[in-house]
Image (tube, rainbow, N blue to C red; front, side):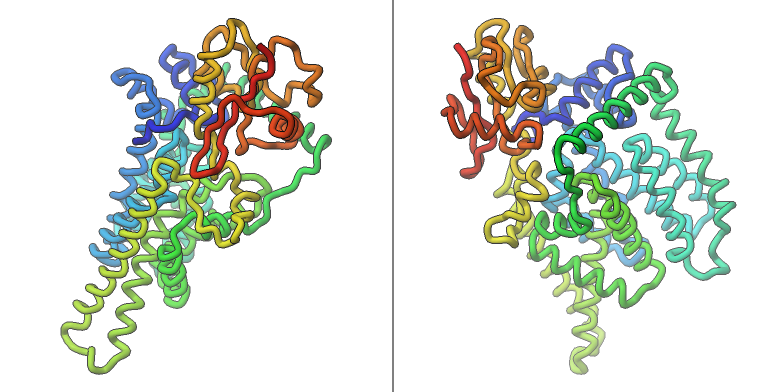
Length: 475
């Protein structure tokens, strides 16, 4: 169930903003557009405010992505490839991890995939250009990085459209699509037209800039390596799936037809873009996953066809049928493997890793928060709610989650706002909640001190990995 674990920091921000939306205050959570939050607000008009309900819109958007994946696979290649790619999407553990959190990436990926589908239709019928624009607008209204679609469509136009004679002019394409994109964007994301929202965006930008500058001055800021997304794909997908993905990419590169170029650009354009910027999260690669599924299935079909056609005695009217059976068997085994892994990792999908490094140090170093994230933080706060005296102060990292689940009389204070010398803490700080997934430059000393010199009064673990600890500071 998608409500089995508590909200993490980003999710709490979304939920707080949605609650304000219901009060007609649209000025919160300004770094992200309103699309997903409006859908969440609609759901809350009819359903209770539980973790399940908060996550349901994102899960439904990810589930709905099955349909454009199927139709893209069908129109590019065959109905068989469309069905198989859809099934791979539904069972992929990385997809499940992104689909079960209150984040915009599920909505972005759905509309991104829908825009690609309309691009495929546009190659056959000019009337679909406006559909592309609407889908792009909805993608941008889901997450601002949906604007990358506008840039992706340029190489798609030149390399994945067919012959030069068939290709429309870039200028006419922009004029035919852009108005639909931006009108749709501002209709859905109307909050951007509210002056108070603009002021909040400017203020948030200043705070964000000051925070980054302060961190740069206080600590050595180390950028993630350019290959972090390649590493993420390797360690967060089952090895059998990785094998068919590699096979598919190799076959696509070898063939390099318009359809193959479309899929390769879909994968490598965002991969290169996000690898070039020094910041980013693993979930950014979610928009590539539908292309992974189609490429992988097409690669297996090509491989089995090549195998049978390369053996003279198999050259008969039954060659295609034999190849289809073998392809289906391989994909069936991968589906079974993916479902088994997903059931084993449930509900902690984000903790899954192939662990290519024996000590899992690669995963720990680059994707620490994906391992245990904020699991059991809700339960730790509930423990504090039960044991803390009235008016107590609770030291922790994700104070927005603390405020969401905590008693109204409790005050949540960030470790980074406290002195590293615990003897200087006020006597009213009753408890400290330590999350191993949130050790950063500003709280590392405090975390280390608490874990070295104090014994936790409550510990929460997942498969032997300590996710959260509660320390009593004063009575």
